[in-house]
Image (cartoon, rainbow, N blue to C red; front, side, top):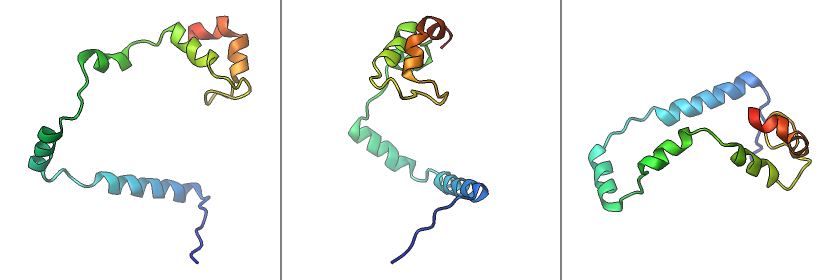
Length: 99
């Protein structure tokens, strides 16, 4: 039975990630004709202008409130800052405008 080792050395982990991405992106697109042929046959969905611009628009206060207040577990943190949903509920008036 092969035993897998857990890597804990930060430099080694960074090296593994770097090697993975170098390998992933090193291959060039070689057969453009095949890709064109595939795209003509299968007609992948395309974004319209509204969909293209939508991710670039500002997030509204109501959208922030929906995300905060529809999270049912008030003891969990919805983001990396460590503040719980309960915190955001309590300080909604102060926090939502700056988010």
